[in-house]
Length: 231
Image (cartoon, rainbow, N blue to C red):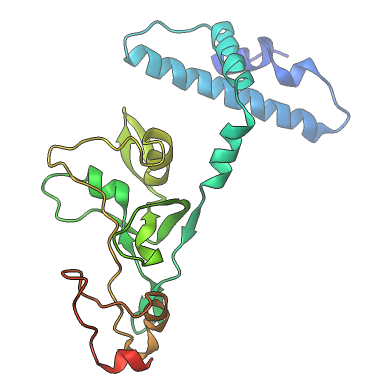
């Protein structure tokens, strides 16, 4: 079987998994064809990036050898780390609009706070946080230790677009290699403000906050004696 273009020539005539073995079930052969297609696409993208950095292109055989070498060096710990860090949506709620009773409360994304431009007053906000990573908050509130990260592609590292969740875990190594900015921004574990609890819209958040005050200026400030304490 021949190919109609360079992509097909690489996929079908050189080290093809689909042609190396035959199955009675057609979908098994189709699965190997999809793997061949993914490898060729990765090979093309790799050479485009490689030449952009001023390096010479790798041949198809050289790329396959390097790919097999890196895959053979993977250990069980590498896969466990990927499975351990998962994103979860926050269980905090706030009062919604007229058409929606309540909405999930958004918190500042840690990556957006560091990567935002100098002219931006605030970074991005999200409802997703990592279930494994924890900060060291000054307060004892468990919600303050959560690392909120966007699950959308907003920034790039070394000209590679990635989501904030990927940047934090892959490029920043779970927050241990946070780059220094010109304004020397630091990631802080802030205590969440106490919800107002109007019409029951934020009752869940007030219960989770443990009755802490809504002001972050002083930890010794007295609690308000309003109707929130009765919720």
